[in-house]
Image (cartoon, rainbow, N blue to C red):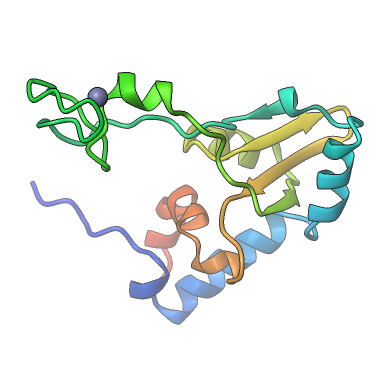
Length: 153
Ligand SMILES: [Zn+2]
């Protein structure tokens, strides 16, 4: 069985890009990085309310771990690190921007693919780990709306 190639910004049509851009503007509000960063810094928002603050370890292949150099490890991630070494050296994902999320659908989908989400009584925010480019260039929305994008020509 042949699986279809995933569609991202680089291999999409103009209509597909427009579709993703329309999803982004419907699902997210205006960037509130300053507001959320200051609320966190002043303990008005809690870091405990950030889900997926740490990146998930994901299985990629077997081989030698690049950290502990055990050769008999069968499960390594993309960077040749075994799950034990990964957990010992875990650092929070670097969040550059905070975007308010408009729907519970998007909250669920972002959490499922390991993206940081801050949720409290005031709302839900996506912690974007990229910056300096349009969100439509990030893989995030292409992954979440892949089914929709395939249907657009
Ligand atoms: Zn290791």
